[in-house]
Image: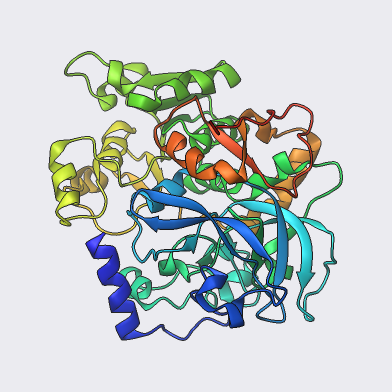
Length: 452
């Protein structure tokens, strides 16, 4: 956390790059009510980051229109993502007390600026987790996660050699935008970053176009899964689950899913949805046997493709644990090294889990000597895929409800964060309802309440 706050101070001292064409650091309308809040004075409930391992549902001002292409949504559905846990843990720098979280949401248009085109009040829409301008070099190619005009954070630019797009509810490092784990949310460039939801697609399915469906699809196609491939996937959360499903859709002959520890139940959850799935629980391997050895036992030479759907903050061994704790690295290389040593020579490894900075003990030798392709899948360009994926939902090729284990209340989302973090209650993916939500659609879970 000391590193995160030092990064905040550094950014203030340096100033932003000036590249953004939309307001930065609007993580809560309460930061400047006169400028950012709705003039009606209406309040809303929102989940706010209050410090490491501390999130709270608070009453905050409803956001107002700031720019002429803004859209204000009544949020009808949101969710909790594994990426949100990195914020909870303080693993992503430049969080500030009171920041509103949540990067996956859908809703109904409440109001919009005069320059917004193609939308009207009352439209049902889903938002992409990234904020794109629609006009820059990357946006013209629909590579929306790399928009040049929505994030002017200089710290990120210096660390990465360039900026990603701005992102909802994901720290000042990515522009500082209030997220959608709230009753209302402001969407900059609303006519670019909102996709209309057809009448025959319920919120419980459309919501997941925000991130998880596009991210898992991107992990598979960007890593190059092709006909006949054996694919190994690290992490049995929603991204890993859907990456397994999409691997078969793209021609994989076998898919092996790897997880363990408190999350080992997720392997059974995923297998119940996909019976031909093969699994490895690393906590139950015989003493001395590694995941790499097990994979090579299951498939001669190892899998053709490895996909990382976990993240870099979870150290398995003591060395990385202490190095991360002491600030000697931000991310562990253990899973990436495991993938590199597991795949066949000239195999392909894709990284989709969040890695934010630097790592030690990276096995560059196996990468070079065996010709392994290591691919950073990047933040998935949602706009490149979401229209295609929407049609796949409509046709029945994809049923996002296979992920959804719980429907929960916005008022209790702070409790949900802790349960999700603890891998408790067999919570795989949640649909968070607000006072604006419709009743559950057929096949969706009913509401679970955690109030005493």
